[in-house]
Length: 157
Image (cartoon, rainbow, N blue to C red; front, side):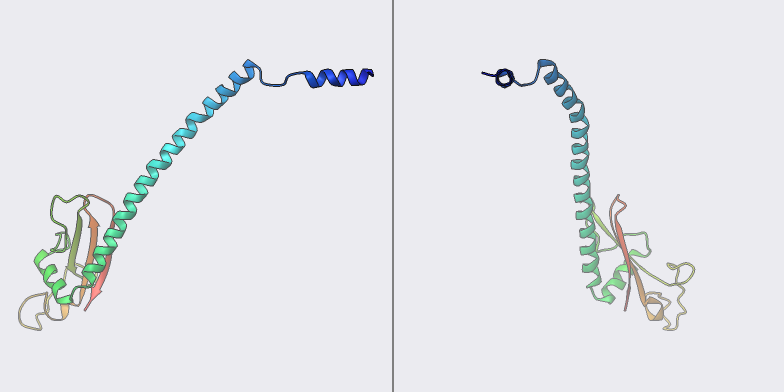
């Protein structure tokens, strides 16, 4: 055998692998990076839950708004008159005590400096702002109770 063959034979018989120190260092590095990674995953899971809740609330609001808008204008006008102002929930609201209660506000609307103050010119002689020419536009607000989630629109005759 030649000397080159003997040297290459010795190199190929050497066992390769990781030393105990290398394994410990790798485990330490893995442990250091695993903690922030797990925190990031936890934040993502929590964020997904919050997003799911907000999305469900949003579509509940849109659904209720469309249900109210589908009602006859006269019925909406009566509900606004019963509520009496823009801060009292109307008859289309969910009952009290319900989880994620949907509140519906209806009020007469006028596009002047104060849209919720209407003056009845009393052209029809009944001194009622909910009849005659002043009741042509209704403001509709639908919101989740104790939440920042809400949608608004105007409804005309």
